[in-house]
Image (cartoon, rainbow, N blue to C red):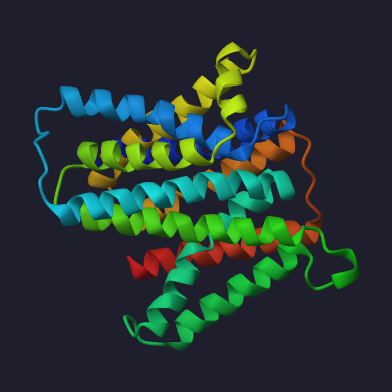
Length: 288
């Protein structure tokens, strides 16, 4: 059963990694990142509503705090998807995926400020290591030849912060309700927010576009199936193991970008990427 849990987490991470590449393909065809994010979440919502209906454990939730945390989780997902695709558009799939995974470091910094965690040499070493990795990955060490735009860096890091909000909201809501209800509420809030922000013309154009198959694939692989896999997997997997296995996502995204989309990384960028992923993995395992 433990091996099955790890397999589910791996499959979820692969799905999330592939979603970056699929999103890049759609953006190259002229689709707005918000529209892409909306359909990724909306198609995922269909899966979660079906899960909610067929689940024998589902029950009506009446706690105001439950809905608050579930809605915050949905806002986190909306921010994560949109900023992630914006970062891809401004930089590349490998850079965006790696910057998004700096989230644990920002959580650590916030914990220091709020005095939730004690400051230690190990933790500050992790922060310094990730900062060094970001400098190498983005080319900030040479201002005259910066490899990644400021927009790509800001939105990539923002995607990581939004990812943190989703995880935090989901964990708090999970103490008050079941996961299928949380995902249904969270992605309903997600869809409402992005529907209001998206270009109405593009939203309608998707239905008659030749790219509709890509949108369905994106929502199925990048939200519906992957989130369900992850939730089932995390129940049967230790947090430290799940943290390490989840690193399959940026690796998958990077390989997709390099092999299929023609993205290019210099040796220094590859070293910076490796520094970030290794440091975040060590920090996540240690925190778990």
